[in-house]
Length: 424
Image 1 (cartoon, rainbow, N blue to C red):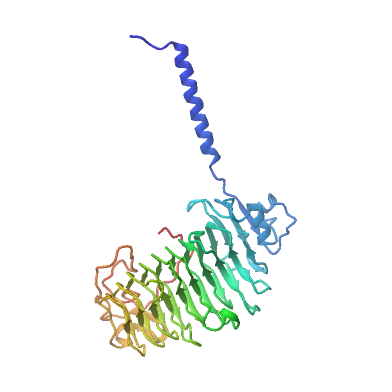
Image 2: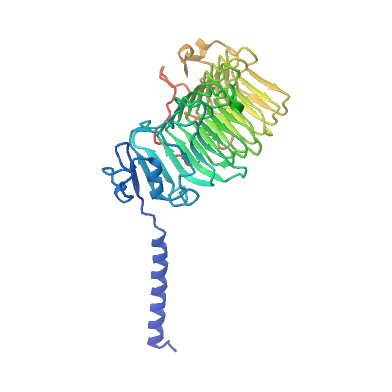
């Protein structure tokens, strides 16, 4: 049998080894070494970027630390963090936040203590604004305070191109006294708005920001595949949660509480349009108009499951001009108009909803906003266990009716989790 000369085999061996080293080197070049830059009101912008990697020598402003990471519109932030100590920061950030590169390598802008780092700009501006296409960003744990501003908004994205912004998570933060929208967006997909406290805002008095036109969460045109969950929105002069505009599809609104919104000019706790929305396990009570409204933007083929609406100004759940929507396992009580109403709608499916009875026979204590089911409530096993694909109900079962299952006690409704990582 013929064999290759030893010198040829030796050469082939080293060619293969060299190729393996080159491949490994290329992989190592893509390994991200996570870095954290620190910001504090006791810091100094004269500290170098290298020094700012220690909490003992932080930058004074958030913008200065962001410049250490890299510019907006690039993926320089992949895997990195800017951590902000408690204190008040009067700056605003317009196209200053760099992107991450993937869900596993996001850029994170984080308050060291939840609600401790406060954005309070001194000018009438949006606190954080994205105009440059951006993605894979987490904004976590801040307070956005509009006190002293006659106008202004919280966090926004703006584009006429769908997908210019995607996978931006706004989580565990408080928005208060914001004169117009706390969170407003167009051109964004796969946004994650989770576990935020949004309240006492929307009292702008000029232009399109007049009373009733500013909302807690406002997903405008080209907003698809959003996840809005575990937020509490209350005392807003507009809608608590508002999805409105063309080209909206597959948005999920779940586990939210909206109350006492739209009391001046009559807005709902939440309004959702678009195709294929999933609206479930929400509590909406004491709002100026309806608890939950389905309307706008080719509203069709959506799923409205296991919501509780109570004592709103008009309807419990209102469907206007939609088609092919499914309503199951909802509680709508003590609303002055029809509890669940369909106006100029077609092909709607409605079953296992509770629209009659007394609050005292169903809830633990509706007067004190405890909407857990009481022992013996007809809602404890009155629902259908057939739910739509992609819906994951609190309690792991759809056999109950309303937003909360029977817990066997008079506990409070489920609280928003902290440090939530969403993996839809």
